[in-house]
Length: 451
Image 1 (cartoon, one colour):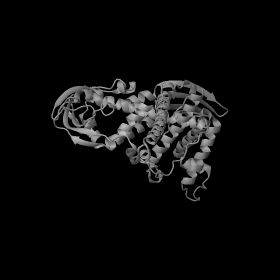
Image 2 (cartoon, rainbow, N blue to C red):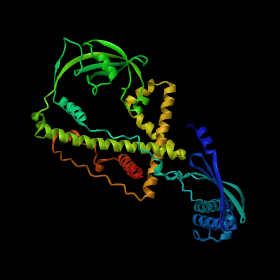
Image 3 (cartoon, rainbow, N blue to C red):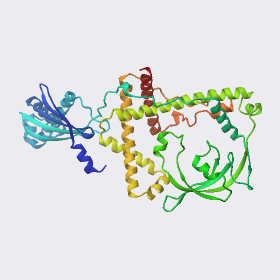
Image 4 (cartoon, rainbow, N blue to C red):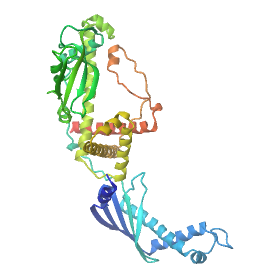
C-alpha cells in the first residue's frame, strides 16, 4: 500500500467519544487501521505541574555562573533561559496530559511502535491548553463466540479393508523390482518417466523433466493417465491438466488448468512382492495378519491427525471471517515486507517473478497482503482466547530419537522435528506462534464439539 493510500486510511474516521475527569477533558477519535487521535484539554494544575518539571530539568542540565549545577534559583533560570523553559514546559505538560488521557481512555500503544506525534491547538500559560496526540493503538479484538464456529464440513475418513490394501500396495512398491519395457505401450500398473511442457507459458517451458510416476489412480491424475496409457517410448501427446472428480472442492477451486505436452521417456514393468509372511518380516512383524492389524492402527492414527489438522484449518479460517477487526498499518506493512523479503531470497522465486506480467505481480501482491492480514488477525484472536481462558501453551520438547519398533512404524513417523536448542531466534518465534495457535484452536474445537 502506497503512502498516499495509507494517509487516506488514517484519516477515515470510524468513531468519536468524549470523556472527562477532574483534571482533563478528552475527545477520542478512532480512525481506520487502529489510528487514534486524543484531543486533550488541560487546566491550571497540569500546566503548573509542567512548568515545575521544566524548571527542574533545565536547572539540572544548565550551568549558571556562581551556582553549582542544578542549584540556580528559579527566577534566574526563567530570566536566563525563557525560550527553553517555555518549550520544555509545553513538552512536560503534554507528557502528563498524554499519560492521564491514556489512563482514562484505556487505549494501549502498539508495542514496538512508540511513535507519538503531538500538536498544540492552543496554550494559555498557567490557565489552559489543548494538545492533540496521534498514535497507533493495539487492535481492538472482538469477543469470540465459539457457538458461531462450525465443524460439520470436516468429515472423518474411513479406514476400511480397501484402504489398508491400497496402502499395503504402496508399501510393496518400496520393495518392488522393475524391468525396462521396449516392445509395447504403457499399461496400467507400469512405472514411467515423462517430460511435461507447459504450452500456456510464452514461450512454452519445461514444467517437469524425467519425472517418474506410477500409472495408477493413486500414482498420477486421471487426465495424465488417459494420455499415457497406450503411449510408447518417444511418443508425445498434448492435453489439458485438470483436477480429478473426487478431489476436494478447495483443490478444484484453486486448480489452474493448463495446456501441456507429455513426452514418454521410459516404461518399466513393476514386479511387486507377494503379500506374505516374508514381506511382513521385512516390515518388522511376523505374519500378514499382524502386518494388516498394525497398518490399520497406523492409518487410524494418521486419519485422526489429519482430521485434527483440517479442524484447526477450519477454525482458523472461520475466526478470521467471522470476527474481523482493524489492524495497525505499521504492523501489517512489516509483515508484508518480511514475507516479501523471505520470498525474494529464493533464486527460483526471483526468476519466476521476472517472468510475471504487471497484472500478475499486482495480483500476487494482493494475495500477499491478504495472507499477511489473515496471519496477524489469527495471532491476535488466538492470543485473546489464550489470555481470557487462562490456557497454558506447552513448552517445546527437546528432540528425541523415537524408538520405532518396526520398519512399518518408521514409515509413519513424524518428520522434520527440530531440537529447540538448535533453533534460531526467528525459528523459536515461529514455533511459539505455532504452539499458541494450536492451543487456542484445540480449545475452540473442544468447545464446538461439546456444544
